[in-house]
Length: 495
Picture 1 (cartoon, rainbow, N blue to C red):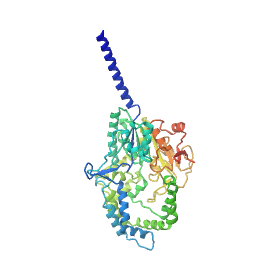
Picture 2 (picture 1 turned 180 degrees about the vertical axis):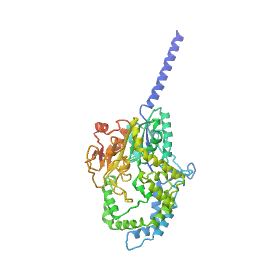
Picture 3 (picture 1 turned 45 degrees about the vertical axis):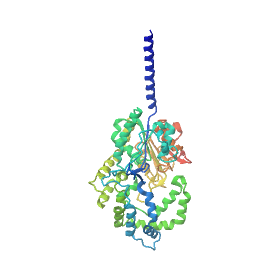
Picture 4 (picture 1 turned 180 degrees about the horizontal axis):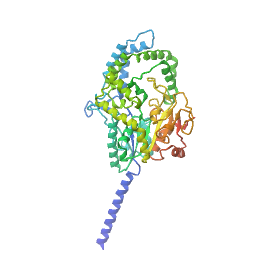
């Protein structure tokens, strides 16, 4: 009798332990893991990793370069001459001086085949949740880290992950790494699926991942935030579409008075317009003649840009789909791009991914994955190419980020009407790949997503599964439509 009782107790204790273990395992997957994929420059890269000379490579080298330029008398003297039409700038001297400062500092550049140099990469590759990396997000106010913070608040930090990668490398290579990362997170958590948010260049990474691995059915939700899925028209500079003029430059400064960070620097831009419009006009006039001089442009590209950033695949992969052939032809003819190189093979492969995006994203949604795209508008293009009048988020053109919206030129209106047209007549979402899953945020500049703002909360709630990723569901639950403007971090219907 005692033996029977003892055996029964042992059995019950074993059963309790097994149930306990099962409950713990179930708790791990109670919430779908959310993975944040950041954009270009949002994650530090290092050289000489693991040695006493380990050091962060400045993003595109801009900080060090700017500092050096302002200390270089030869460059400053030539720039000052541009502000005075009566003084002739020595173009050769300017380019040679820039080459010594920028062209010489090529730590950020990749090899001729578009590979990361030996000893370079990231040091914060985390396969543990953000509950273990609070320094990254707990005090973040804006950009990807702020979105991570919002995700942690919404989903619990133990259920949020950040996929850090070397943003210079080929996007398809990064997508392959993301696939491995997702497998690791699934195994660690026991989750059957994950949700992924692709921010900026991370949107292109997510696109390449979907192109190669969608059939594995590992995604529950895919969210694109200001994504570089279709490229950036300013990258048409690779196709030598260089157009600079006084009107565009001054209009751009005027636009930025109210557009940049919600007008936070309005006084500065206004002052530049009031006190510097004449001199800035002279500068624009000079640059206009400079970009028309084929010899000078070639020297600038080959001596300055090529050794600095010319071999970075991710920058090439920001060339818009319809500009790719022109860019390849122009740059290969100049000697900037070798069509026999590994770099060309990489960017050509991603070009195919770009062309398949609309088909891929429709198929993904049809397979049952929740898909959301957030594209911003309200800022004119950077005054460097012929596309300066495009609506942008201050960097990425809205028509590309939205996967096909019909967009009025900045300051103009569309003649169309209907439920997919914004009240300000700037956007017609009907032509988007997914018109019922694409939101437009006016005056939310590129990745200026603030912690606690309505825009960031909406992204987090969709990513974490608190609401279905479609216009109808969001409008029903949060009273937020498809076209929203940001006012004091609140989203209101575009007027």
